[in-house]
Amino acid sequence: MDTLIYRPGNPSNLGSIVRTSYVLGMKRIFVYDDFSILENKDLFDRVKEVCRRGREKSLEIIKIDDAFGFIDGYKSKYATVISPRSKKLGIEGKQGMFFSSDPLIIFGNESEGVPRKISRRSGVERFVIPVINSDECFSLSEAYAIVLYEYFRQTNSLPKIKSHKP
Image (cartoon, rainbow, N blue to C red; front, side, top):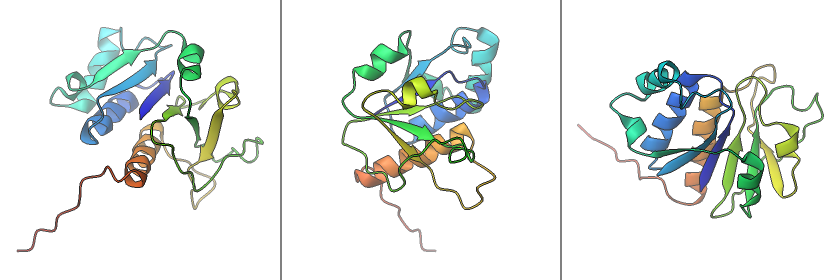
């Protein structure tokens, strides 16, 4: 499974994504970095502050220059739709998504989400993270953690929870 973070605008969110990726044992993430977070020292320092303990060095953060060519290279691709306005805007997605074994999961930036030119691209399946309060949505980093957890749960790749009895 690979993830593409499309145009992240908040270095702290990208730091949380890197940290979550590390915790869940991912080897790499792909970033289409329109805002130059990976290249700007001050912005990347903010990413590192959130990662803590040098976690950003523990996985590959790969900058993508051609997002469309990159996406088209995957057979199974999924775009997250996390806005509470999705239905109002006519963006439908599946709930109860079942991921293929080796997908690309695409996350959009904090303010615009996944653009239509990607989410409606041939072969891209959209899905919605269900919420109880439809006036609110998850942040990018929260949505990332939820989706990755669900992928690893479906593929039985999560570590087993151990109880510690006193």
